[in-house]
Length: 150
Image 1 (cartoon, rainbow, N blue to C red):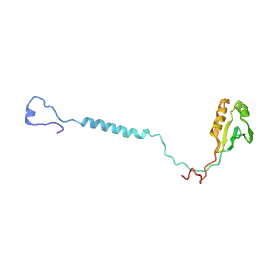
Image 2: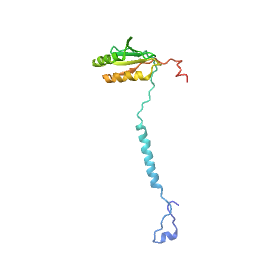
Image 3: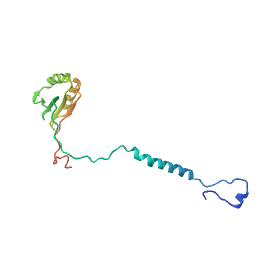
Image 4: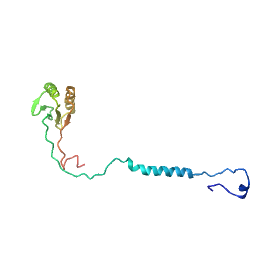
């Protein structure tokens, strides 16, 4: 029994009898209070807002007038805009561009077959001259691109 045994001998005797059962009522009370607290606070912890965003196709953003376009072909040839440039002249041009205020954004356009070490050298040279805004230009993915068909 949950409350111990009550018999005639227990009622008439003055010696207390130890109860052999565990009283779980206080533990259940505490657990129910904690459950109520968690039920009340759980909705307050979610920070997201459910939105149904509209779908729209957008065109490519036009080039800003304060951008520098560096292109790499498959052989590793470097182009400043559309003019071929050597790596020695690149440092001078990057230093001139870094002095402009606000600093122009450096856009890197690389062929798929361009070796990564050439791109890394140009990025390191731009960072050494103080150009912080560097972006990579890519083509938008088409509906039949190989990466989407997998």
